[in-house]
Amino acid sequence: EVQLVESGGGLVQPGGSLRLSCAASGFTFSSYAMSWVRQAPGKGLEWVSSINFSGGDTYYADSVKGRFTISRDNSKNTLYLQMNSLRAEDTAIYYCAKDSDTAWQKDYWGQGTLVTVSS
Amino acid sequence: DIQMTQSPSSVSASVGDRVTITCRASQGISSWLAWYQQKPGKAPKLLIYTASNLQSGVPSRFSGSGSGTDFTLTISSLQPEDFGTYYCQQAKSFPVTFGQGTRLEIK
Image 1 (cartoon, each protein chain N blue to C red):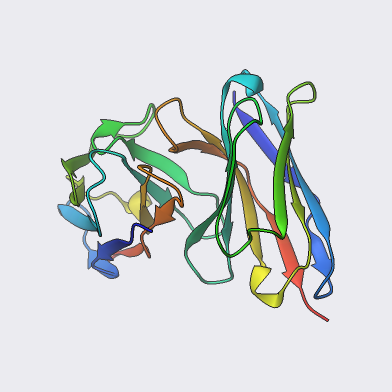
Image 2: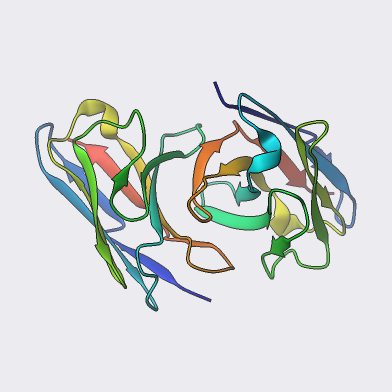
């Protein structure tokens, strides 16, 4: 059974940093691209970042480019999102998602971790 | 960026009804479209991938069609558990973009 478990969310002040983690199990992690998608309170889904299976290619939404860094450790079956220079508008539930083997379609999602940016 | 526009924004229907949700892309995306269902407080769930392929475990009353710029998600006979918000997502190019969502309410 595929499982994705996010951690690392919490309350942080504007300008602060957080690192999210996503522990994966139930599939060959090193064979699949992975993504982060967020959802602000009461809003729709917003793609944040994706990384290919090896970690050699990364992609970012313009809203987070230069502030967030996606990475993965295939030896630990873990996906990361380093978030710096956080802003109030980054407040959201952050979901980790596994990308299917047909393009960037997300076939499994974690339960999400809440990030709140507030003073 | 490719913009995804869903309609309607919300719909209320009765059990047994046929429900159709549409998604339009601002430029052609071939068949690189996915549909997700999200229930309150839960993560999204993949229903349809590559426009018309049913994800494993998803009931056959869900179907998807379309290619290019116009796509449709159809629920052939609405069930009580189908309430929630439905999103389309284009997977043709980065940035990946989602539609704004369609909220489905059961009458």
